[in-house]
Image (tube, rainbow, N blue to C red; front, side, top):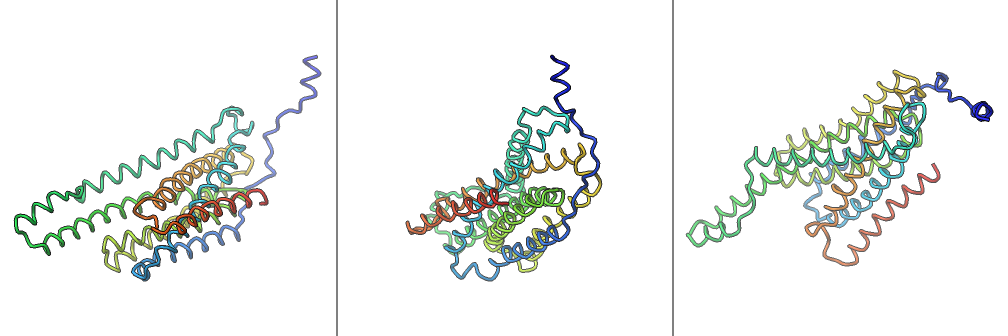
Length: 316
């Protein structure tokens, strides 16, 4: 009986070398230049328009992008990672949720990195918490209010220098990983969905980064140099991914491990970005518009962004 069952069960064949890494050059180059274009718009727009009171438009765009990024992380990227890391040919347990584990630790790693960077740059630049009682005491002692105002401005400038430096370092970390995922993926659907998500993601992160540059009162030259660093990092990751992907068969253990691993790591980063870097700050007390109707429209924009990416996952 056991012999008949064994005979009826097809043997697992993991030796196929007929499938190779699909370059998808046109699609990847489209992703590269598309991401480069929207990143440029996002990061340099605040340099020219931040004083034009476009906060309402920024709010709605960021809310929409938050939904796009979050659903991309969960549905598109993590959804692709799960079957890859559960493939019997990889040699791991087919029932253990490896992709979820890697994504979870990736989110925690992203938080740990951002937190430590913030601590480091805060200490390095010597910023301190605001102390209203000290300012009040200074006024009572007869110090020049203009001098106090200048000190407050300098403190605010240093605080935004910390924020912008920390934010850019975190962006560099996760953007290169996601870029590698675009370059390494053998699935056109994954590349396409990541390209759409990253266009929104990079534009919104560029907007947020540009605003911190303006508030830190950077010179135009420093603003442009930091903006260019932001622009090149994801295309660099795409190039690295394409180089790595060309080195193995698409059905090899290396392919399954690399693609599944990077998909999982990128999913965790995207989920972290969507929740912590987009949704929470966009709907925070400091950023939330005063108008109730606009707040409601922001929530609708977030759900619409998520719904669109969910439909793309269904039809792609």
